[in-house]
Length: 131
Image (tube, rainbow, N blue to C red; front, side, top):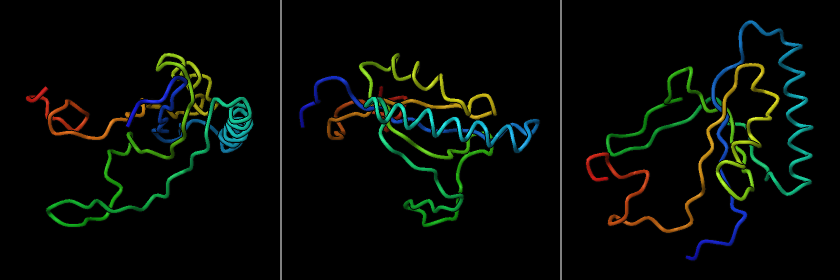
């Protein structure tokens, strides 16, 4: 599969928990501001819809199926969205304006890799000693 011409999509992962020093009103104001900000960026073609993630989950591996969540509490992934940008730097600049950062959340941005996986190419799944 060929990589599409720019702009490209970047996965935005919402991480963390609300700052306990913030009031529910402050947090709700940030949430409301986020949805206004998000809707504007969708209208501009800079964001695509994403969703919040439920608290429950399962981990499926060779050793079996276990209940989650699976990250440390300070690394909780609360949702995901897609940013459309010309570069990782532009995507990060867009995410840096997210109103929910003021209430404790942070964001991980990852470029979407359009190539199929291959055991002979270094990828995010390649062990460190194989890079």
